[in-house]
Amino acid sequence: METGLRQFEAIAQALAEAIACGVYRPGDRLPSIRQSSRTHGVAMGTALRAYDELEARGLIEARARSGYFVSAPRVARLPEPEQTTPARRSTPVEVSELVFRLLDEIKIAGFAPPGSAFPSPELFPLATLSRVAASAARRLDRWSSVRDLPPGNAELRRLIAKRYQLHGCAVQPDDILITNGALEAIGLSLQALTRPGDAVAIKSPTFYATLQAIERLGLRAVEVATHARTGIDLSELERAIRTQRVHACILMTSFQNPLGSTLDDDKKRDLVALLQRHSVPLIEDDVYAELHHGALRPRPAKYFDRSGQVLHCGSFAKCLAPGFRVGWVAAGRWHEAVRRLKLMTSIATASIPQAALASYLRDQPFDRHLRSLRASLASQLQSMVTAIDRYFPPGCRASRPEGGYLLWVELPEQIDALQLHAQAEKEQISIAPGPLFSPQRRYRNCIRLNFGHPWTGAMEAAMRRLGELITAAR
Ligand SMILES: Cc1ncc(COP(=O)(O)O)c(C=O)c1O
Image 1 (cartoon, rainbow, N blue to C red):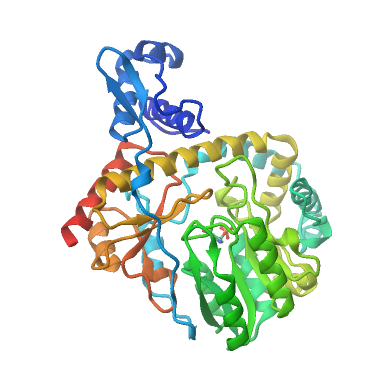
Image 2: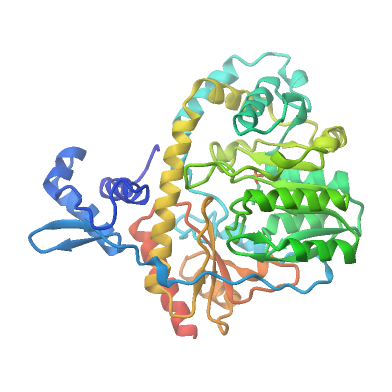
């Protein structure tokens, strides 16, 4: 990680990650302050400040005359949300102004970021990427503007295909179309599969940018009940398909935004079989695939697809290069249709970011970066759940994603997340209120929180303040 954190925050972050990964287990003694100050080459006061920070987060505790020990995790008390129960009718989509306000507020320097959909840039190898991009720009083939026309840079597609192969997915370079981020991939896929007025099945709640893509194309959304741990309810999905003439289904199958849920392998296989039985194509938004906190990368539904009916959308925005705006789709039977739409929409994706990413994937330690990124996210999740447990009033529930950097909090029934957002905004704390994630404007007492930022004193203070606001509103 190339971090802009202060020294004590960086030491606290490193120790928190070691605790999250199980290097230090509950009850283990941590190195003494003196040892830590030597290890990190800092003053004793700086090491002490790092330990104070971890103690304040509830990750460690000081025992008189014995040193510092890893605390037992406190998070078990906090229950998880139940399965959602959206109305079964299809709805036209009109995403509120609030989405645009949220996007504006997270741009303001000094705003606490839990409402943002973006992970912190601190977590990415930006200096290496700049160097690689400068060198790729200097070496750029002068015919790249023509050669990189859709489907896109051949070397980048080869390297993406290699990662699919690594995970057992039979996707070839010619199956891949490079896009301007996953959002373009999703939008083009939807456009290839539907006509205005068609119904699209989505999990409920669903990421607001997906809702905006549905809105932009004049489609109708059918929200399907979803569980915060196990994902979409397949019998409800089948019922929706039987009763509503669904033309496509858009789902995240791993670490979904905003709930954090993941379908296990059996459920992914059943999902693909169900959709195939009904001839409904699946747009699989898998932008967090690389962000698993555990050892194994979950398989995508695409893995189980034998008929080319899954359009699998990926991106480098969340795992490597946030500002490059490079994503892709392996669109199966719709590859050529989506390629033509891409040509008609934005002609091509810029050559330099494509060349830079190809060079990075070929020559730089992508997997090492990913290991460090995953460890940071896992430790930040623990800090966030601990903070919710500590500062939020009784009656709250929080999801426990096994990857990604977003979780979902159900607040007590009487709390209005839109009012809470307005109050928090005045104090420069951003949160994403539940109604943004549902065309039926449900989830009024829910919020989505982002733990994709290094856990600093400012983050802790923002969570404490949010807890106070929620407690006062009860
Ligand atoms: C779930 C989900 N899908 C798609 C996107 C868009 O990805 P990209 O930035 O690659 O367009 C995002 C970005 O926030 C996301 O969270």
